[in-house]
Image (cartoon, rainbow, N blue to C red; front, side, top):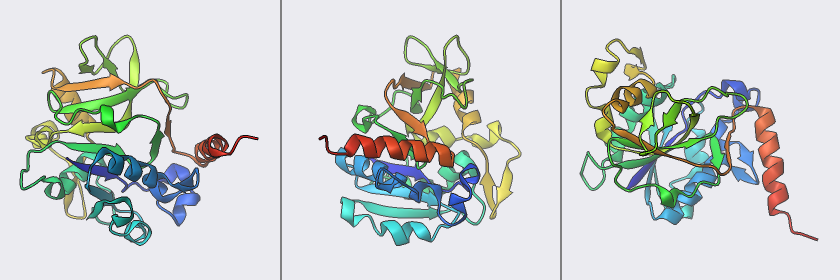
Length: 243
């Protein structure tokens, strides 16, 4: 299995920090956000990781190299000067995610700007359906949530108890098959389609093709300088030697 890390966003809410540094390369707990993910992926036995980039893209290979220090092979999927959003970014990265020549192999996806104690080993290597999503309790800054989870593990567009997509999951490339029927008039940037992933997920939920799980542990959408500072303080306190 290969993995894809979304790292192309502009990080507008994180300014001024992201004026000079991409959000996934901001340090928290003594290392870049993205490095927490790389360590987990390496421990899981994944060897090939695709990092999609746009804003300040040249900083990623400069900071991470080829991934050898983690026992990984890093591949960079440059989207162009303008990010392609989640759906367009995944579509752009698909050629690099083919596993052993198979272009239908599932891949692990994680957003480069989240931090969590979720154990990636819990993810299925072959999801039942087109995707398996990790959901968390809605954070204070976005209490509405994104999706609901039914008793059988299917993700629904609505429900009594709404949860937030954690930016972690396992996807089959077939999720993007026929995407133009769902998004018939996508925006374009850098000569490529630019569109969100959520409409595709919602379109397939009615056919029970999207499954998920509820992670009740720690998770942070590191979207603002305040949240970054708070998480950094928590992680440093956690790792400090006891006296």
